[in-house]
Image 1 (cartoon, rainbow, N blue to C red):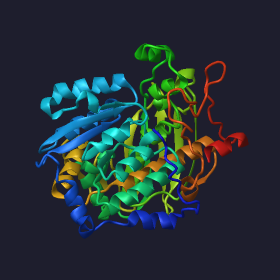
Image 2 (image 1 turned 180 degrees about the vertical axis):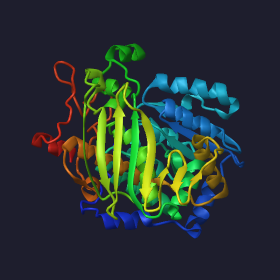
Image 3 (image 1 turned 90 degrees about the vertical axis):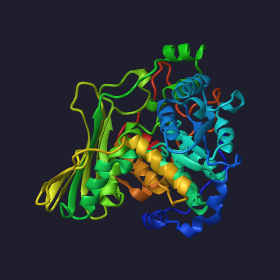
Image 4 (image 1 turned 180 degrees about the horizontal axis):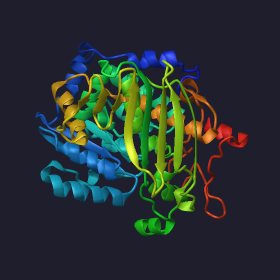
Length: 448
C-alpha cells in the first residue's frame, strides 16, 4: 500500500469550516450524466461488479450481504494482504452464492498494493481491511471513480480523517454512492426512535450516556501466527494478524467498536461534541499479546449546547456488560437502543424490520441502480473523529477540543508498507509494547 504524497493543506481546520464542509450536499442535477455513464456496464446488462478489499470476517460478511441484494451482482475481484484470508473468504462465499462469485485466479490480488488492482475491475468496492488503511483505500477508490461501501471506522488519527474528508468531497463531486458500516442508521427501530426524539417526544435533550462494555475479542499469540503463516512472522506480519491491539491499525476499541454508540449520540444530537475529557488504562489485559491498547475508557463529551454524554467502553471479562445508548430530556427519557420512550409521550417500538447489516447494502445498491443521491462519508468521518478524540483524552489525561483532534499532526501510519518494513510500534526486549501513560509529558507529543 504505497501511501501517496497527497498532503493536506497546513492551514488549520476549524469547527466552523468543518461543519460548512460536511453540510454540503449534492443535488440530483450534479449527479447527472457522470453517474449514469458509470453504470452503463461493459457487458451491456445491469450486473453490478463487486470487488472485496479485506477478506476477514467483516469483509466476508459485507460481501455476503452485497451478493444478497436484489438484481444481478457478481463478486469479480478480491484483495488481501494475506493469501490464507483471501482463499478462505473465497471458498466460503463461493459455497454460499455459487455463480455470483466469479473470481478467477488472476483476479485474486495479494499484498499491500493489491487494493488498487481489485478496485480497477469493479463498479463498487467493499473496503473492510483494518481501519488504519481506510483513508488510503477510500482515496484510491474515489480517484478511480468507484462506488464504495466502507466499514467503520474510517481512520485512526487526525491526518487520516482529513485525508478521508478530502476524498469524501471528491466523491460528492463525482456523484459516487458511498455507504458506511454504521448500520444502526438502517435499523427500523433506531430510525423510528430517533425520528420521535427529533420531533420533540422528550423535549430538549439535556444529557446522554452510552456504553460498549463486554468481554473483548480474539487474540492470536505469536506461536499461533507462526502456525497460520507457516513461518516465523515479521513484526509487521504479527501486528497485522493482531490488528485489534495496535493503534495504527485499530485505533483502540473505543474507535473500532464504541464508535457505534457514539455515532448514535451524534445522530440524536444532530452534531458532534466540541470537547471531551476522560480516563482509561489497562487493568486486566496486561499480557504482551494485547499489544498497546487500553482495556477500559470512560469519557465525558460536551456538545455545543452544553449537554454532556457519559461514555464507557470496556473489554474485561466478568464485569457488567452493556451495549446501549440512553438520553434524558425535559419531558421524558429514552432507551434509544431499546427503542422505548418514557414520559408524557410514552412509546415503544414493537419489533420487525430486516437485519440492519443486510438493509444497509439493500439501500446502497438500490441507490446505485436508481441513480439516487447517497453518500454517508461525512457522518462516518464525524463519528470516527468523535471516538478518536475520546482516545486522545484517555491516553493523555487532557481536555481535547474538536479542532485539536481534527488538526492533530500525530500520524500513526508506518513510513513504508511492506512485511519486512519497520512497524510503527516496536516491542521491548521482553516482548512488551509501549503503552500510553496519562499525564506523562513524554507521551503527550505521541498522542495529541
